[in-house]
Image 1 (cartoon, rainbow, N blue to C red):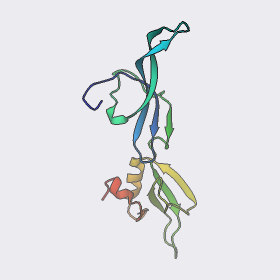
Image 2 (cartoon, helix red, strand yellow; image 1 turned 120 degrees about the vertical axis):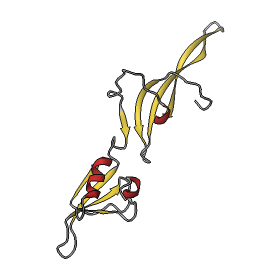
Image 3 (cartoon, rainbow, N blue to C red; image 1 turned 180 degrees about the vertical axis):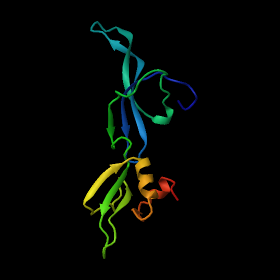
Image 4 (spheres, one colour; image 1 turned 45 degrees about the vertical axis):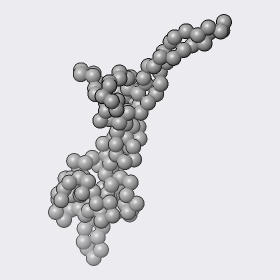
Length: 143
């Protein structure tokens, strides 16, 4: 929490947003009241759903989070490799783009790749080209 307090939550889902950041959907059990038919109210608790940035989540040691439902962008595959032919007998090569790059078009084979796979493609001289619009080499720090 912003003031350094901690809060126990139940992680219900994991979402990767278009900007590539991970968020956890969590249920927080908070105090509330329940109104009874006779007009009285009594204390109770109810889950409230909140979204928490991944860097603010501390996993419980020994717990597996592999079964947490994952949605949003393809998990871990935020880069797009497009196989293209060059003009005048050049190529073929891989054009490497950010997943949401508007310049990523054409080609006869397209696949989402992980950051490590994109770095490998970019490191192969003559086998790939960097998109001059989205510049994945800068984000992947391959310069």
